[in-house]
Amino acid sequence: MEERGISQAVIRRLPRYYRYLGELLENGVERISSNDLSKKMKVTASQIRQDLNNFGGFGQQGYGYNVKYLYTEIGKILGLEEDHNMIIIGAGNLGQALANYAAFENRGFILKGIFDVNPRLNGVSIRGVPIRMMDELKSFVQSNDVEIAALTIPKEKAIEVANLLVDNGVCAIWNFAHTDLNLPDNIIVENVHLSESLMQLSYNISRYRQEHKQS
Image (cartoon, rainbow, N blue to C red; front, side, top):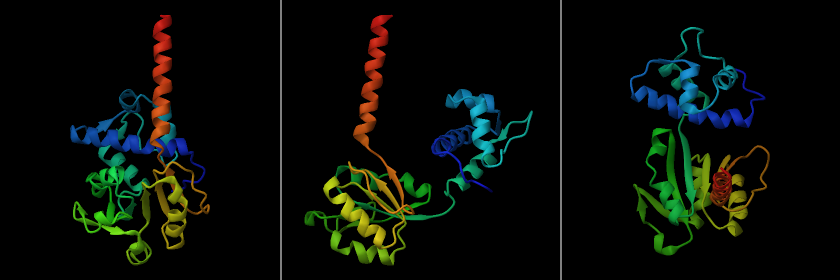
């Protein structure tokens, strides 16, 4: 299946399709049209068809989409049928919240380790995974086939730690640090800037208030 040239906008919609299709499966829905799916997702039916045509289409005219089949195929596209070993760097509030998110395993993301610099946390377990000290990081990554590292550490340390991870075989960074990482082009980085998301929310609230004042 050819997937080159697919826009990031399409890729970012795939998890939403997966989530909505999962809900349909839970509700016993066996098939759905692009029109009905568009009403649920608030995306146009033509956009849904265009998005899915990037990967082969999956639908039949007059029938719509087989929900279970489409759910399974999108899961394959997202790589959710494979296991991905991951670690969390930073065992503060955010790091511990991520570690406690049990749904990771249901999607094939296996939490192998948690790391921090605070000696008081050494050996504390979160869902059976002990917190280790940073001096163990290099050897741990090398011996546990770690693909993904989530960074929930101060920005001052994020670049140094990210480079150490990349040098030791980690190919994907889930970056919660408040800084952009300048890493090699072959390294996959997903930035999650919580403060930026809040600022966008603030902007939309301001617009909402202005529009309702005028009406």
